[in-house]
Image (cartoon, rainbow, N blue to C red; front, side, top):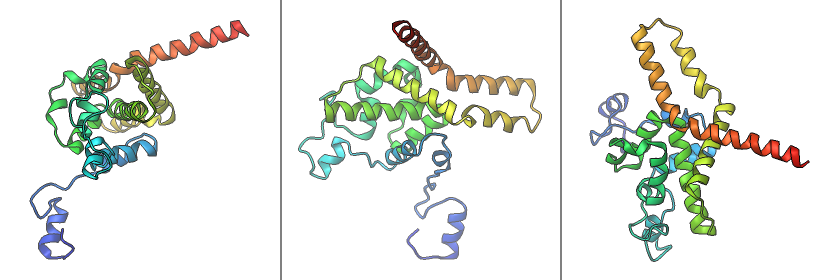
Length: 222
């Protein structure tokens, strides 16, 4: 839209098309995501290619080099920082997402994040969030997080989100109970829901086990 309303432009807006025949980006999937507002804003910045990576900072002459400070090999674009850098890739590999070819296909941050959040809602959002936090901690404060520490932080965040936003696990089931579905469809839905959460269930269980172990040890010491 160029700011001038015509019947044609109104029709194209209603049909979800821009003047260049490209679909208008939808944002409801992001605004409806059941995560803290700061995470939503962060994901929006990713979609808008607005994170202060070295590539962006170099373009704005805030730094002399656009090379990634963690691997010192490639330019630190948003997708390199959150996906392609070896320190980010090992986190995705630990959760098994990296085996999906579609994970690597997208070259647009919006499309990549849209694919991830649609298929792995909490896991993807929490992982992207903590990969960025780990990157900032290492580059700005010299605090290096190990793979295990990053996994545990992601697991704790997901555990908190499941407790704070119960609709992450219950809302879709309530909606599905409104209408009858065949046993085969029900089985497919169960498998789909399991696929969203089984990859990090082990991490959460291990973290919760460590919490109980620490609490017992603290009681014994007390």
